[in-house]
Amino acid sequence: MWAGPFESFVGWRYLLRVKRRPRAFLLGLGLLALGALSVYAGVAAFGRDSVASSLFSPSGQAPVIALGLGAVCLAVGFCVTLFGALNTFLTSFSAFSAFMVCIGVMEVILVLGVMNGFQKDLRTKILDTQAHVVVDAPDGAQYFGDYRALTEKARAVEGVTGATPFLQTEVMITSPTNLQPALLKGVDIGTVGEANRLPETIKEGKLEALERPELVKPFSLDDHPSLGDVPEGHDRARAAADLDAEDAPPAAAPDPELAAAGMEIPAPAAATAGRSVLPALLLGTELRRNLNLWAGERLNIVSPVGDLGPNGPIPKSRPFRVAGWFESGMLEFDTRLAYTSIAALQRYLGLDDVVGGIQIRVADIEQARPVRDRLRAVLGDAVRVSDWQELNSNLFSALKLEKIAMFLVLSINILLAAFAITATLVMTIIERRRQVAILSAMGAHRGSVIRIFMSQGLFNGALGAGVGAALGLALGFGLSAVQLPMDGSVYYLPNIPVDVRTVDVVSIVLVALAISVLSTIYPAIYAARLRPVEGLSAE
Image (tube, rainbow, N blue to C red):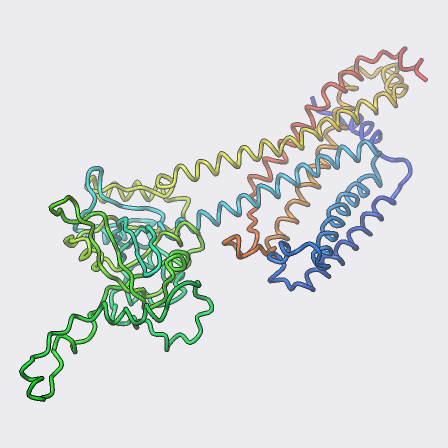
């Protein structure tokens, strides 16, 4: 049932204000100006880069008070300005109902945009470390050989942009002051950049040191005159002294006859041969911080998978040297991951030339599933191929469910706006009973009266949804461009990510319009049932 030109014109006229009143609009602009000045003063006092961390400082500071007052003035001023702009040409009840729809639509767009931003950042960091598609051993097997030929076959598949083999195992890392569980991952430094962002995340050291550990210079206090950024409680002098004693082979006992004859005792060849080269590895930033280690220092890798002894399994332990550290931007990876070369990990585990899997990167992440199917057809049943959605199904399913739940919860605000539309129409009917009765007496049938009031609700809903969508998009793109900073000591993100998607905006607007139209059904039927005699006799 669609309103014709006559019904739409009458319904639209019922919503308009006879006399313009811009006082609320001007008051809102004044509050916006006051809030902007207060926020600017607070940001100028702290500096833009330290605003986020400064918000948690003692509340007695004047800049914090200025920022708080500025934020309150901006929020109140924005609402008053928006309502005043609507109330300038609409009646108070109509302006309020459109205002409620506008706020509800804008809020849902912003919240979903921020959620999309966090999910996109999380997905990017996970896939930059785990790749888009993973080829690993089939069920019942842990490793597989002939990985070089499989890697070349995978690179030739349409949609694949890079592939690299890897080998991994669960270990315990011990340092002079602490121990931490970790996932030790062996990589091929020549191809790891094709499917992994590890080369781009290295903060200290070089990736080449994993295959050429002689490039790692042993830790020395002379090379680090100032260690202010190193965690406290680590005895650097003792660690540096123990390094040479632990790595050097034991010296042979001197010949007592030569010593008695007063002859010079030559240094044993084993003692002067120098320090043995230890395999190198890269640690995550948080893992390195928890272990209290520095580049060049020694640590021990302990694996529960060892040889059998007289009293049962014996853990396997071997010393490694820290070549540097990386920062992926995700706490779980930075506190748990360590990288070394595939050859070093194979020697440590006592394996032949085998790997645990192949990481593959695709050109379009949304097309990972078709690429996975093509890889299965090419590589056969000798290996198992999984895409990123299968590997992280629990996480991304939970995030999707959370987004749906948030959309439904926030849509309650739009539902509240629908009650405002219903109340507006009921008040309009009560106020204009005479006009409705006159229209009925002049021959307007019930369907025409219903369309009049439904057009009012549709107009309010369309106006509120349109303005809310425009404001939501503007604020979303504004936040994305301004890059509102976050406290770096608490969050791994430097600023609030915002990703406003077209499908979300269209869905929210359609839901708002549907709720607005449904909210007009009862008032419209109530007006259509009004008898002309009752309306004309009303005072």
